[in-house]
Length: 159
Image (tube, rainbow, N blue to C red; front, top):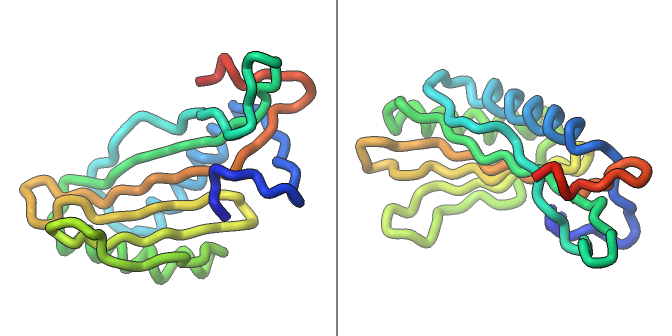
């Protein structure tokens, strides 16, 4: 599932932007728990973004998706690697599928894992950033499929 593209055969799930924020925060919290490591965690919380297909000019602005990028930091690289290994093991037990597990095409060749949960309609891109730096991070970028607001609610004021 490309989380930024609505599949024609599946209409978007209906939820308010507030419900989406709460859901994304809960999913991020579950991912943090699955990592099994405790360090500092970046802020802010989940945010609302437009989906392809929104057309504000015609008033069709009910489609939105949730994005929640965050990182665990303040730990040595070995501990962050342990957290990534825990995610590889634990998230599939919780209904997540590993779509991609590779090394980045970058000078430090950091590990990158893409997880997807079709039931939840979310994907999580997880990478170890700066493993050889003084400030390594386990970075998670959580993104949802497109959702639709209920009734005639607009998502335009929720960004």
